[in-house]
Length: 305
Image (cartoon, rainbow, N blue to C red; front, side, top):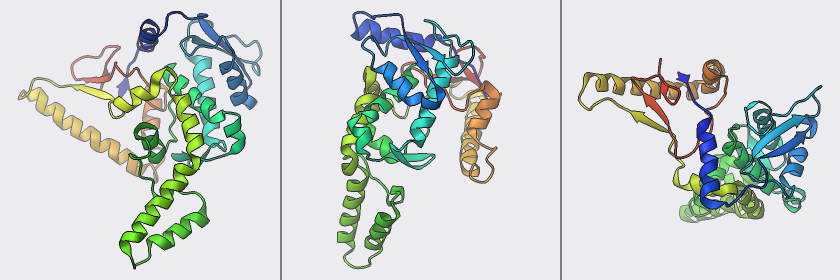
C-alpha cells in the first residue's frame, strides 16, 4: 500500500478552530527547549508558560544536539515529531499507566495526581494528534471506552487487572458454581470499581487534558471513522473487481494482526515504515478522511498497488 498525504490538512484543521472559537493568537509559534533524558518535565514546563497556546505552531530545540536548530514558526515535521514520539514512549512506560505494551490502563499515583501530570499527559497526547505527531498505540479498550462513552458505556475485563492477588480473588468469585447471578454482579462490580472508580480522579484529570481544543468531543462523534472508499459505479465490472480487492485487503489486515504474535515482521507498522517511513497512519483532521481511490494516484488519495 502506498500512502500519499499532504501538510495542508492539519493547517486547515487548526485554522478552523482559530476562525470559529478564538479571536486571536498571542504568538505565531510556541518554543520548546527539551532534553531527551528529561523529555516529559521539559515539555510540561513549556505547556505551563503563560503565553503557550495549543493553536500555535511548535518549534523544538534539543539541547543535547550540537549546533541545534529549531524548526521555526513553520512546522516541517522533524524535531516536533521526534519530541512527541519520545513523549508518548515516556508516557507508555511511566507509572501513570499499567498493563501490556498494547493495552494499558491508568493507574493511580498520588504524586502524579497532585502534580496534575495526568492532565499534562492528556494535553501532550492531544497536541501530538493535532500537530501531526504519532497517536497513542497503548490505550486499552477499557480506557478508550471510558474516555469516549463514560462509566456506563465501559465494561472492563478481569484480564486487564495487573495486580495478581486481586485478579486471583476475582477469579475465585467468577469460578464459583453456586449463585451464578450473584457472582456475576459481584465480579462485574468489583472489576469496574478497581479499573474505573478507584482511579476516577486520575481518569478525569487525564480526560480534561485530552479535551484541549475539544478533541474529546470529536472522538465521541467520529470514533470509528477513518477511511472513505470511492467505488466505481454499482454494477460495473470495475466495481466487482474493487469489491473483491477490498475483501482480500481486509483479510490481509486480519492475517497481519493474527500472525504478529508469531512473525513480528508481518505487521502493519512494518508495511507502513517501508511505504512511507511511518509506523502508523498519521492522525488526520476529522473532517478530511483518507480515501481509497481506484482510478487516481494524487497527493490526497490512497491507492492499492
